[in-house]
Amino acid sequence: MSEFVAFMESRGAETITNDLAMEWVTSMGRQPSWSIRLSDVRCFAQHLSYFDPLTEVLPSDAVAPAWRTKPYIYSEIEIQALLAAPLSLPPANALRRWTYHCLFGVIAVAGLRHSEALRLLRADVDLDQGVLTIRETKFGKSRLVPLHATTIAVLSGYAARRDAHLGSPRSPYFFVAEQGGRLLHQYVHRVFLRIPANRITAGGESRWPTDSWSSSPFRRPDPDQLASRGRRCGTRAAGSLDLPQPCQCSRHLLVPVRHAGTDEPCRTAIG
Image (cartoon, rainbow, N blue to C red):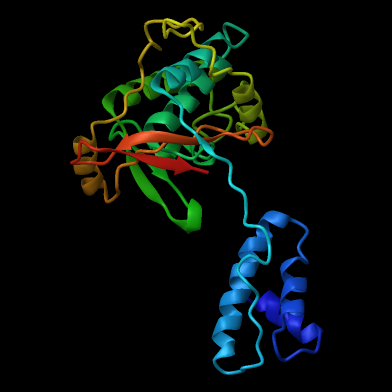
């Protein structure tokens, strides 16, 4: 609210009026933020109204509410198609196809935000212990994420393939671009845009080729096992899915997950 206080001082005003409050709410050019600013100034004005009866409080519908895209639920078949599709990326002998295959896979099974997966350092991926260290993420928090044995095997295979391809490390990141540099968000989004996740045949099989290694290489860990490992690691097991979302795509993801110790599915929304 310091910005609003500075705004009031710049206007020489000591009492909040609807006109002044509305001017401040709409002074930011991005309309989606208006509803947040409205909520803030309303709470502040309601508090001040107990001390200054001349304080005016804007109505809650003074601006249109922020619009949120309806989440899209990816089915298991679509997720398998998303994992299989990168394996056909050209060129055939490049690291690129394996990088995106494993990147999308670890996002799907470990419940990572795509930005978290891209920021993973080699030192953050402990394949001996089967634990990912996710550092300084939302609200500055860090956490440990345990992995299923099948995921550990696949990531170990990628690490060996990556190191053989590059010879010597050229960056500290676990997932790298073809020449060993950091993967950039825009490139991941571009690849994801080119993966038509809805190309599923009537029989339920993906149209993309798979091989014995990729047919089901990533498995979501058993909830009870993860809960036990999570307690030892000092973290809660993840169970959400957050595939990369390009800015021109309006899909959000909502995937079914199960909490440890329960048989009832729930829905987890990823924005």
